[in-house]
Length: 155
Ligand SMILES: Nc1ncnc2c1ncn2[C@@H]1O[C@H](COP(=O)(O)OP(=O)(O)OP(=O)(O)O)[C@@H](O)[C@H]1O
Ligand SMILES: [Mg+2]
Image (cartoon, rainbow, N blue to C red; front, side, top):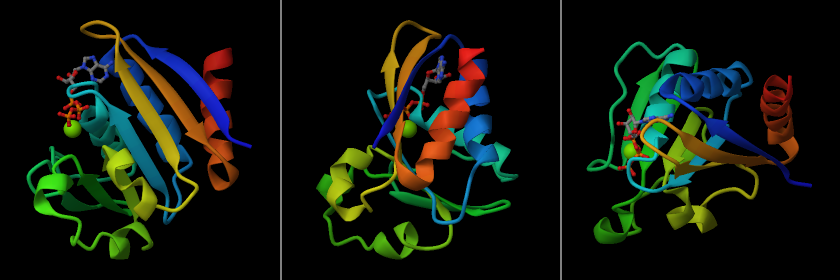
């Protein structure tokens, strides 16, 4: 069963809080898939997530490189596959996706068939300058994360 939670993030601080809650439950091999329009907050979320898992380097958008690797309490693979269509699908991402690190993938829907069935997905929607609606979904090993988010916001 897929668990799902919908939230309104009223400011960038709320996005940071969400990233922290997810980071508290982070595990090796975890995959987070991000979708949403340009400028909806995928990289911003990833930046806060990286800080919350102990990455000291400043995370920035990997759009022109597809993949950037960071070291914190976990190894973090930050991918943005928006341009993969131009570059070609021969790029070998499996070693990372199926490795021990954590993968956060912007525009993951473009490579959905390359990914395991279970991932944590977050879909961002722009509401206004500071507000974003997100739909977070996960099953099996990701259920606990969705429950933690849901508990945090229901009180
Ligand atoms: N609640 C919020 N959460 C996230 N970002 C926000 C929020 N409110 C405002 N913003 C702003 O929205 C912008 C989001 O840009 P960001 O680069 O994170 O988007 P993106 O989804 O990664 O875009 P792209 O598809 O181009 O990679 C930033 O300028 C950020 O400061
Ligand atoms: Mg981005």
